[in-house]
Length: 223
Image 1 (cartoon, rainbow, N blue to C red):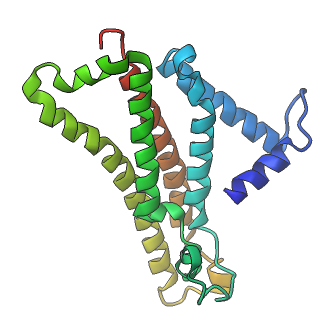
Image 2 (spheres, rainbow, N blue to C red):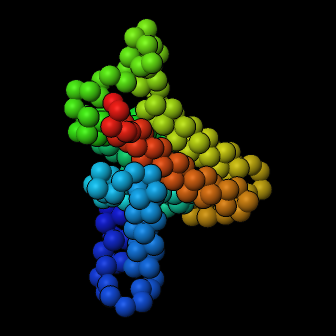
Image 3 (cartoon, one colour):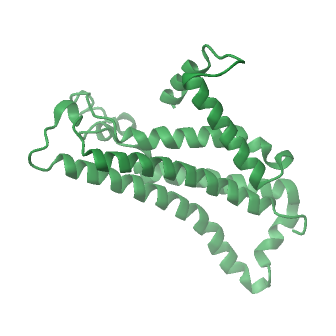
C-alpha cells in the first residue's frame, strides 16, 4: 500500500487538465480502463460505486504480484524480525509477494464474497435469497457450494500462479553459473518477462471476476 500511495502522490503532484504525461498518464489510463469495465458489465448507476474499490484492488494486486520480482538488497537485516513475518518476506534472493501467501489472497476473496452478496441484498433485499432455491428447492446445496467455490477459486488461482512463479525464479537463481548479484539482479530474462505477464493477467482476472460476480448478484429484477 505504501508503494501505491507513493505512486499516486507522484502521479498527481503535478497533475494537469491538459495532455497528461508520465505517471499521470498511466493513472488516467487505469481510471478509464476500470470505468469502461464497469460500464460494459453493469448499469453505471448501480455499479459506479465499485469504481474506487476496483481501482484500488487492481493496483494493489499488480504491485503485490510484482514485488516478488524485486531483488532483495536488505542484506539480512530483517532476519530476526518476526513482526508481520518480515523475516520471511525478506528471506530469499527476491522479495516475497504478498499474493504468494494464501492468507492474503483468501482475505481478498472473502472481501469479494462480502461485496457481491452486499450488492445482491442492496438491490433485491430479501428476494436475493430466492436465487439459492432456483430453479428448484433441491438445488439449494449446489448453489451454496457454488457460493463457497467462487472465493475459493479466486484465492487459489491467484495464490497458485504467483507462488509457482516465485518458486521457479528462486530455482533459476540457484542453478550453477548464475551469479546472485545484489540479491538476484541477474535473472533469467525470459522467465522474468513471463512472470510480469502472469502478474498483470492475474491482477486483471481477479478484478474482472469480482466485477462479474457483482453483476450476477445485481442481475435482473426477476430475483
